[in-house]
Length: 261
Length: 269
Image (tube, rainbow over all chains, first blue to last red; front, side):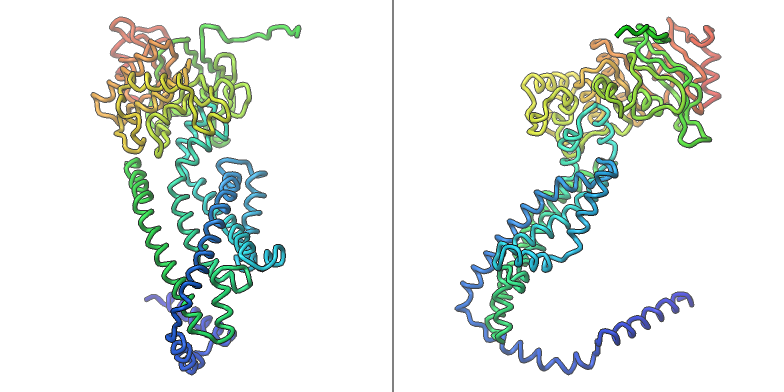
């Protein structure tokens, strides 16, 4: 342990204390608040099973919202990511596209949801639009980064045949980035299901709408059912995406390893 | 247009001409210095040198991926430059095999080879991956010529080093090229496979009457297959030799002395 390290650790601890003071983060409050948690948990344990069908249908709506949002979002994000990739375009094209994607990404999905609720009114459609926007910003960025890391050798070789940019994208860029895209789509869907679950907070449909309303009226037992359904769904989706990953992505990653030898 | 034909150094027999060509990576260091080359139509030409001698740069100048900082290059009367429309239209006639081969890993052997036919394909067809039947037949013919029959549907990343080179050759042949450029295509191969690949290319070169320009680092291998061999050292062409009968001829001086030239090269390397 060098003196320099001690100084750094000291600074971090000092910052932690100052920041905690500024945001009123008092551990004593936390300990004193524990009995309140016990009250909520106690009420939550009193689950009311008759709400399970309602929770199930609400969850199904949420999943459908996330599905539309992911698919449409990716479909819009893909061409944008091609425009934003530095190895495919000049700066007059990738610059503005990147700025657009960054601007879209600046807003979290809940802010988009508020905006769309104002635009198209309360309900799931506003949520779907919010998810689409968020997916565009996120997948657009991830995908242009993947495209920029594509091996330049096949790009140069195929370019030297005198192909068009469209052909280069179709025959080199898409095949070489497809496995990454699949992984990102799975992650995005998983993420969007969780996101959509809370978009109900601002009236943009989905299961979150039920959760926030039951909590508002202190009906923790009913809220608990809906939260439980979210938890189970997320776990199931996670399990399915692991299976898909193992089948398609790990294999192609392995293939990439073979080629570098 | 009643324009007078301008004076030209280019002869019709020569498919590639380089006149006092210099390239540089920065303003002080030159990668190639005052290179003069002229290559006959239908020749089997080799460029030999150590790594870093500038021999790969020479190939990149010929297919327009690089442009010289000074000097004139003409490929079939056209100055090679990837960003120039006129040259872009003739790029499909130049088959270029980089040292890395540049195969698309995640698509099949057949698809990789069909990429060579893309310049002949319409917009919609290429977007939908709909190749006309005669192109697919042509690709299959080439696949059997390069000895890849039965491996059409393998993904490129699954192939061995020798097989990958065959795919790269097939893709170049699929272009129906008049010029074939290959950068150290047999460098990392074992002796037997290297000669198989060389025979494959030489065979195709004769059959299709191609002008083949191949970069090697092994001068004996180069002399075995090529009509002429240019030796590049530190960016300069120091020798241009070829085998006539059983002697090595120096085309720069006209000398014919087997041992001396080989010795000279041996001292250089």
